[in-house]
Amino acid sequence: MIHLRNTKAQLLLSVREQVTLIGVALILSILSKKSSWTFEPLLINAGLEVLLSTVFIYSLFILYDTAVAVLEFYE
Image (tube, rainbow, N blue to C red):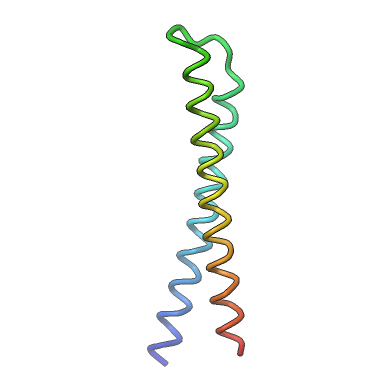
């Protein structure tokens, strides 16, 4: 039973992480559309786009890991 509790806790942590990543991606997306930066707007927007891409790629890795864990849990 302890092993199943640990698995469930890790799955819940992964879901929380996904929700957090969605929030971070939303904030980065909103900030990247702002065009009135006072210091190097092109550099700031490019940096925000790189961060946004990084968040989405990491989110895909987390989603894959969660899917593998769920499939293993139900086997």
